[in-house]
Image 1 (spheres, rainbow, N blue to C red):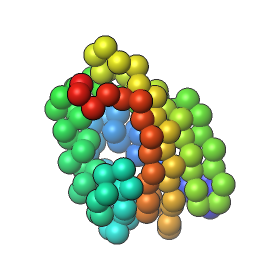
Image 2: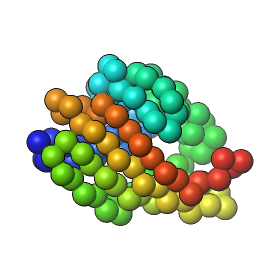
Image 3: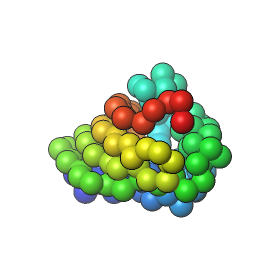
Length: 113
């Protein structure tokens, strides 16, 4: 499960960086739950990515560290392409059958940007 969980997380970051918003529909489970957004379903992530890329077309993430244990993945990310900010993010995922089923996250990104 470890390799499958790592691959799911890395696929998500690649899709985000490539502006491949539709890929979230394949990477996330149908009942995916985002704790930060308080939403269910992959469409909420598609919409979130779209809003961020509309505001900051150059936005991209870089994985600075990744820890995988069983079906859980924790990542430390730097975010680039957001003017006047150099945010960091910590995300944790639960993976089921090769797809991300649940997300928790913390970020230093200012919401007024």
